[in-house]
Image 1 (cartoon, helix red, strand yellow):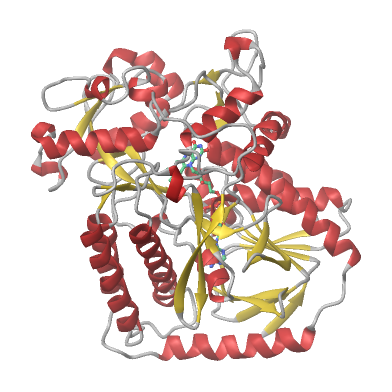
Image 2: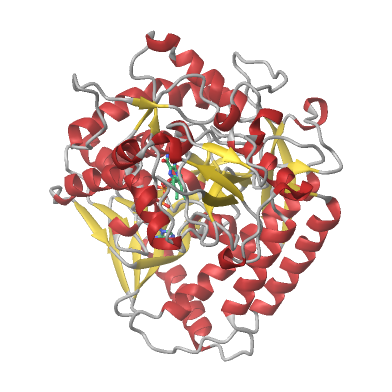
Length: 579
Ligand SMILES: Cc1cc2nc3c(=O)[nH]c(=O)nc-3n(C[C@H](O)[C@H](O)[C@H](O)COP(=O)(O)OP(=O)(O)OC[C@H]3O[C@@H](n4cnc5c(N)ncnc54)[C@H](O)[C@@H]3O)c2cc1C
């Protein structure tokens, strides 16, 4: 086993992780040695698939837009569960981040005079989403990656899966990883760490997220006694292509696409009369499921067993689709042979984003039982600051990733510049134990296949912890996941080789997803109200008197202990959410 010493180690090379690396490097004038560790090649991180755009008020006053209106929309969209001080930070910093990426070379769509165009997104009062066609994430990632390649103090460890965070006496000391190419274990010892491992949307079978979105960093933090926040809030995106689940970006509706039921009706008129197809995602996902439940869905065996509704882009015309949604056109033609310029797209809601995650303070500093873990931050989708509360507005995640990437990069650099000494003995001791644990898993010859456990988990989450929830279904999910966790003790790893052992990697990811899914189901069962993306059949209304609070879940003596925490309200008092 190799132990490498760095000033800062960043776990994850998506938008949040790479933005953090850029900032930490700048803040230290290139003096700090930074390791960026990713289980994938950095440019295959999930962020490359972000399609629709990034939010930010670039032109205050235009269309009557303002920073305050962006904050209000975000708070209302969150169903009043976001911490409003954090939302204010987001909206204040978003415009300068969009401009930074302009300088880094992102080809934002522009009008004839060269001005960056803003597009409409769900739940936003006016168009305020900057975009690069429907490949925004790819271009932002490319700009960051290209820039980082010229920084000699940043070393990227591609295809290294981290399996353990080293936290001792409330202080971060490093992390242990497996080099996928060789199977060797490698420990990164450091006084400053940033977790940026993205969400855990892959805990569901029908999802728009990539196979790598398994919530590893969140589960590793949880194992160290770090608390998680608002885990019951999982976003279902209304328009996932059937049957694959690949995302048809909200920008399609932003550009003017309609939703139609089996009768050809624009049914959103009955659910959100003023916003129609640009209502927030929780409302549209429920509307689609209600149409399907009431017999107005569409069946087509060619697209599998699930019913769907239609997304109609035909009236946008081929030229507009080619210019603003080329990726969507390509995906639809390649996946199901349907050209959206002249045919209807079959879509239904799919798991898309996880609002919950690692409990942090407003600066992204990781918290354990309300206390800061020294030297450890979380940024991007894995961290719950909380901006999105019970329901994220589309295009607010990319802003969150880069703003908290920057902030945590700064914080980590500040600490790393003054605190250089590490606890090498402890790091070595914990790394050796971790190496033994991994080799025991690799040697496991039990009768349970991790892939069977994963399929059963997907079935459970899709069918019992979905758009609409009820006590019976959630209790079933809690029981089933506990059973799957027990069965995990008897898994077998068929592939014993060291080189690119994806069998071992998949097993480690399955465990992480089981741990997090159990938190989701238990926290959802506990929350007896409907708020944002958490919609309970028995408690159909939001109940601010009893439930205007964050859920905090902490691992204590092998059990998930649930407590609650006050929501920070600065300016916007909760009111009825109408669109
Ligand atoms: C299809 C799709 C489209 C979207 N489009 C938009 C959009 O247009 N606008 C918007 O605001 N939001 C969008 N979102 C949401 C947004 O893309 C994500 O929230 C965001 O990209 C997450 O970025 P991140 O940096 O937090 O993590 P990710 O980009 O998910 O990166 C995670 C990183 O962690 C690494 N990692 C994970 N586990 C380990 C481990 N164990 N060891 C080592 N490395 C590890 C991965 O290799 C990767 O580098 C979209 C989401 C989806 C699913």
